[in-house]
Length: 374
Image 1 (cartoon, rainbow, N blue to C red):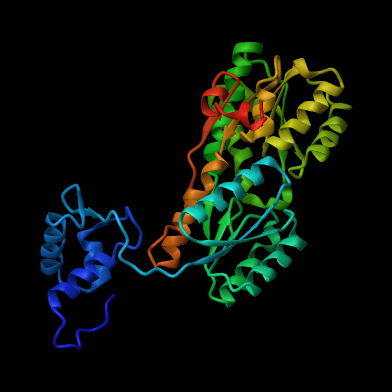
Image 2: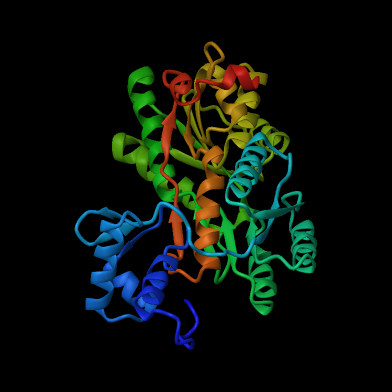
């Protein structure tokens, strides 16, 4: 807020109006009367009259009865420097997250320092140390080793650096990413509907491709997949369920499923994978042994690789749950600005999922041909 009125030439009412305008940290922010009272310390009556006056004079826009928006910022805001530790080019999904975040930071006049943690525990710790040496104001962490999450969080807390954790929860950090159980339900229901339509509901086996080092939270996707499957196809409750660790890696998933198929004789097999990389590895294993007609696979992320596969004629990748990484950047920067401006932020914010199939992939991603993904 503005400094106390100390000069006899300063007009107190204008100083208070300036306080109200500065309460709107970013252009387009929407605040209620109670928000203005809390931020400025003004009494409710004074704040109400100032808001109405500033609105009538065109400085604020009224949104509803008790909400106001400011089209411009009256703050001389510090140029923030944020750090992002991500998986680099390990997958197209990671690349899309990084690109969207870089663009959103530039649009918000924020500097961003990016390091590649190679999506491994050892490199993630080194990446955090490097970001802390760069004196960033906030860190966004995207790594998948659950066991080191407390150590990363403690390093940030010791330096008083706010932390946003993408996809994998970190103690004390703001979580942003998947609603894992909901995403699993979508996948399971998709598999069940397909099995009812193509196999008359006859299912011999369900394979779950997991990533154990990611910890229990992402595994909830697979719990949701089973629940969604049984919800639509109750007879699937009696199916054999096999858990295989694909470690979010195409080659490891292919090998794990290939080994399993050497002993499994199931004629109708449903596969729910933790992500698209694992889903595609599992699918290739079925194709290698000539059993693709006996499987149906659903992935998670709707990554470019999966969208390419969905467009392949007669593929048994029947769907992938969309996470829309191209939208992550704007959401993450909004959260970062709220944290840096000391605004209240919920402990977890979830993306909205949609099922992407061969029938709707071009509607959700009409520009894939231009990007070389189709």
